[in-house]
Length: 571
Image (cartoon, rainbow, N blue to C red):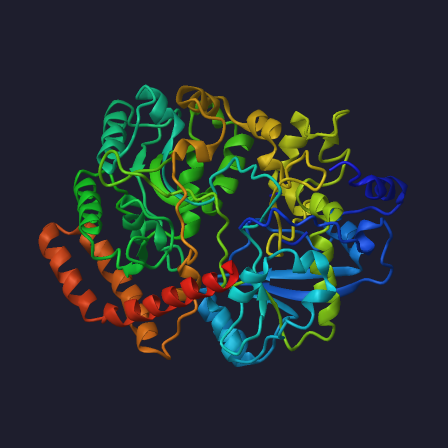
């Protein structure tokens, strides 16, 4: 995802090397950080002996990488460290982490995702508090308050968040979060209308599909599909919070006027949302395979260009889908997806997009007690945040993956852009170490974006013509501008960083688990029900038996705690 004195040493090393390099693994404002700390990786010196560490990441791999990846090898030569990453396959994060704990065979480094609390409770993570001052790049990654927010019940910090961090100016061009998405071809056909509500959105999809029932090759369209496998259930269940104008607190809404939590599952808006899905299902607009399809099947459908719309987060589909469209020359048909920030009624403010980075304190990169050299791992993480290696991770090798103009600005040729979207090339050459801490925003040279997708010239040059037409029609230059979102998040944001770590050790955690199980079972039934009112009533009856009031009480306690903690740092 993600300067001028950059890779001179690296480029020289690549050119001088006679070995055949072949093959890698694999955002909250902190604008005051200068990031000038130096390390061996910044000096252009090789670290000599290379130490290898193992890492497990509790989410599926976005790209299958080769062990002898070229850039991974370059990073190893610069840092003295190489990390072998393994990813989630065929299990939930909780299941995979549970298996690891039961077996007692731990990797050196781990990101357990939603199951980090299990690792903490098992006592297999190393406290990082006493180490942080030794690693200036890493220490500067968070403010003192943010580091404090990462402390667990025993007062120690065990993991480092990796995402949602900005350095310098915010140069965000893509919408990494959630939205209702619609294909560019649908908007063009409709004359680029202003879509404000669910009714607007589905009305356009219905009218388009009636007049244009197939793709360019004659394949029948899928007007709307839903991804709701075990760990992406948010694609179905959490839209009511956004439709009511709230940001993605994930598990509750927080009324800023009263500083009280609100259950978005039982609001009038929630009922209206699922009633709309029910109506569209009965019309044949909602894909009947929505509730049985796997993630791979979902991605396969999107990759054909058949799906006109869905709710999802950008990171979950766009990087894969856009590369497929480019490689198969499908961009010309307007299949790329455009985000819509819908509300339940016209004229409401929305917070689908929040320009404040989200500090997810519930998960991150941790070092286990199995690691024999935690300081080497921490130095590696510190090195990765240095500018030279950050450029290498996200821009690649100067002269091979990007060039530097006379004005000091990075740019890519068409050939370089094409190879950057080629899955085989990424497998053998690109190594972003994407689960380690990283920045968005502006490079320390004050000119370039930390990541190519946020470089204005690169972003516009890589947009398909159909998407450029959308931007021109709506008079915007980035995806976030399409959302017209306000930014009113409170000091507590996001609350999901607490609920993600709840366990059944507390009444609220028990309720939270039961609520999730009930939604998984009943929401598909509600959408497919022949009698919506009856289906919704049955769902609400079972939902109330989960005792959501216990969950809400614990969330209110956490909310109050965060508000008080913020006051401490305001003084």
